[in-house]
Figure 1 (cartoon, one colour):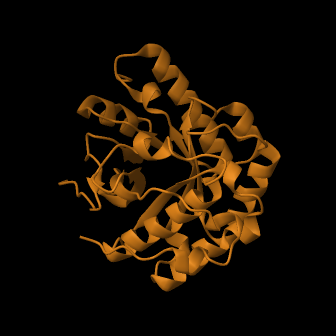
Figure 2 (cartoon, one colour):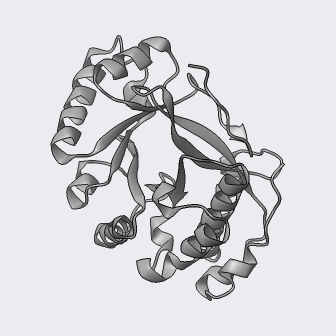
Length: 251
């Protein structure tokens, strides 16, 4: 079982990020596979309670007072756990865009954690979380552009659902676009979804964006996405999230 590093040592230099959370949390890790290469692309860190409680049990405690602290603490703890678990591929971290008031300053704890725990920044991917609406798309564009320049990978999560859509994509181009699970559910038999996803894949090809299909649960869904040349995949078909562990998939 991984140890729990006192993240206050890293966050203490930031006034906005030093608010007391009032709760503890940890992570489960879900594999992201490169189906074409038959290997792991990486793992997404999914917030959980210290005893494996749901993400909602933690996210429901995030408010305007502790939002900055929570966002920064998530980055540090995810990197720490990934390092202790000897993750040798990509680590995907969800972040709260409204908690980043200045990209260059707010990335410092991430850089310090990566250095402290020996985790290369080129193996860190930042996803826009679906849990809150982006209040300022121009500011989000500034964040993503800065992160990309620093060597991080960027991803637009749950594309086709919630707050992620074409207007957001028109403002900035991420490295990876994650197609929402509702668009790939039963895609092998759903003509409308097939047309939509095929169009998204073609669009991303022209934009030089890598497509990732999430929420895959059946062999038929996997095969159809593979036929569309979607190589990155994620879902229960491959593995459920492992609590403070890195599940594997038997090819």
